[in-house]
Length: 238
Image (cartoon, rainbow, N blue to C red; front, top):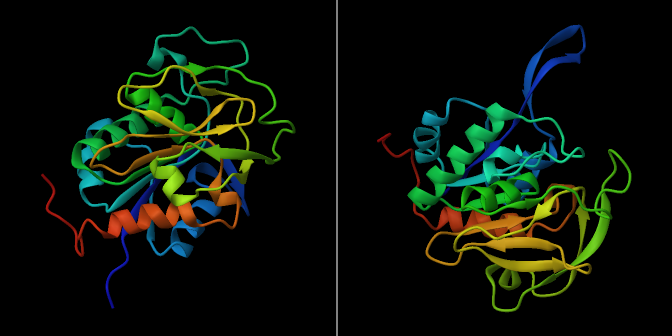
């Protein structure tokens, strides 16, 4: 049986999480992320925050990478002052995930950014963010839905050519696109809902949360691209 592509997924790092009789620091991730990768035919591996210099050796062991959703990106990374509505920084996670993105792009590892992960992909390539928009996270802790329309001729349009209703929960969005990136889907209000990097590396960001839906197409496309790289065993660490 051929081996399934190994897909790394970045995680949260949270202090003082309580479960059962324990109250300890934890690295964690909503179960929808690994389940989605598994349902799409990949093997899921969690990547908790680490020293940024460890990102390249970690990525070298992967066939594909998912940068998961989470807290707001600290505005210092795109040269802005914090808006009062921007959440507290997650500095260790910012540094780690930016290093993961850089390593994946340098190595040609298929990369999917989800929500915060899409915003980080944009920032990593020199783009900026709108620090607050209305209408995309109406009820705290509850995912909403809205339609997104693909841009014809893009990678995303090849995956999902029709307008699609997606689960959404975000209050920030892409502003100026990073170098080389193009928009590949929009919401009805014009918000950029997907971005991609044309070229030999499979690199896509979606502003919504595919792990909260039954549509596997985006992650299946990632897994297929990861499997197409021909890695059937762990490569040597450079």
